[in-house]
Image (cartoon, rainbow over all chains, first blue to last red):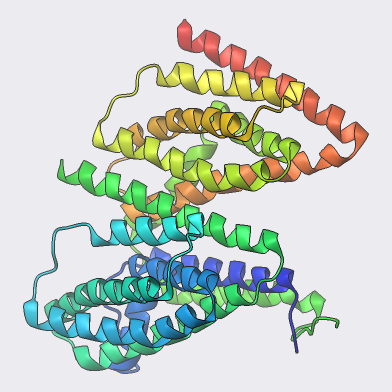
Length: 204
Length: 203
């Protein structure tokens, strides 16, 4: 069973629209009533500052081919867990605007469709997982919730998101469809740049 | 091979609409007014002035007239350059003559569309990029206080990209003789509007 490029892009568009739809909610900890694993999933999916960099990474890994996509599938959740554990132990999140830089760097890489070796993509994946996992862990610690199970929920979501988006990009064959992916990357990078300006504007 | 469909075509849109309705219930449980206002006001901002709208449309139309690779290079590059202008505006880096630059963008980009001018790709990208800085800077200095930075920025970028997409879609009529003439006419209208904006900025 196969799908045309238009159908795949329409599916991606709907996925992004759905991701934006509940974004009206804040990125605070979510209580689903279904237990800590689902709370972790809910928290992650309602945190656009985590979701969009992960999507950007998955798009970039997909643009680079099957191997980086496969590596990201496993390294990102594990790095996220390691970062989350560190955040749980260390406590307060850093003041440095990590999210802005994640948007800017990963979105910029997608927009430029930069040809990087697989090992560099894997290093970027680990870095993203450690940094954002740390922020997650620190947030869970402050909330005093069942952090390990919540992190488990986040890891499962990461696995699914990376699988979906990297596979989507890998399946694109027509040149213009890759351009659409690059445009999405440029939008993420532009958002990161504005976000950075915003954080400097607020602190300045 | 004919692509498989899980849903009949007639049911696709209702299914998407149902998904949105179902999801909005979840989101409402956590809504905070400032955040919703952030995305909505960010999305509305690029549509807030005719000078911005016509210039964005002209970028898309001109890209379509120029064809590949400009048709895809401009939409990839423009949001980032515009965001750079927004960044400058946000952190307080001054850019002289912003309103004049915005008016000139409509005037000159309209003229490019009207004359179907085909400069070298680098010249087109630099020209559009410089004008993008002015537009972004104006938006950056006009940010409303108390909004969510992430959602506002997302809304702003998506709206800008949408305007480009509308321009590119309009520009696709370039393939027909009558369409070419219509686009050149539209370019002339945009150029005249730019002249009016310039007059207002200099007054």
